[in-house]
Length: 267
Image (tube, rainbow, N blue to C red):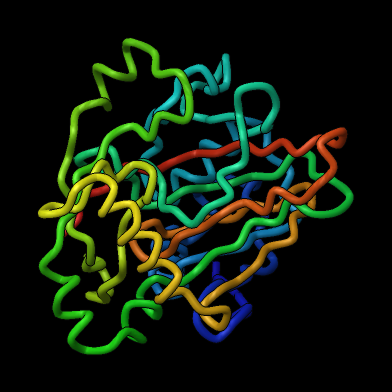
């Protein structure tokens, strides 16, 4: 079937229309979806009604699901699905980041599927870090392209022994990443997971990365998604960063399922 879509902003995000992911992967052009994601960095697919097995079947159109960092938040029956409910130990990730940079091969994409949302607030914003990189002065871009970050767990939650064994060692990534499909370069890092920038102390690195975010991210490069139940949003972690807006009534439920897709080593 032909994939129909509408661009949501000039620099990032497209809404796919007329697509029922529960109808079965065999009826949907996965290659077209993957190309659309690479081009727009964020895909919004509204009005879905997916059981956990249907969600996993649907995201298989885009890649191969893998287990997430903190196994205590995995779905008890479908552990390739992470549960985001922001109660108890969980807190919204309300700063700009890209997911799971503590891995040698971080996920290519993150899929978020909304089950329950508050009546107001709790949006998720996305930003095109290719556009952010290109807007920087030439001498700054050249300096950044030679930099690397060293990454590990961010210390926000308890790390189980199995997770530490599988995902806990330090890994080095380029600060500027080239997308393997588009060839576009984007700023690529997670402030909290970056133990340090090579050649800088940990304190210098944290200040440097925060200042880089402040200098590079502009409102015109962003898309802010207002959630509705049944929304499925896909973000290309190789190009985009995202953050949650922690501005909603915590007596209301905000429940999302998250799936990450296996990726390649950043270059």
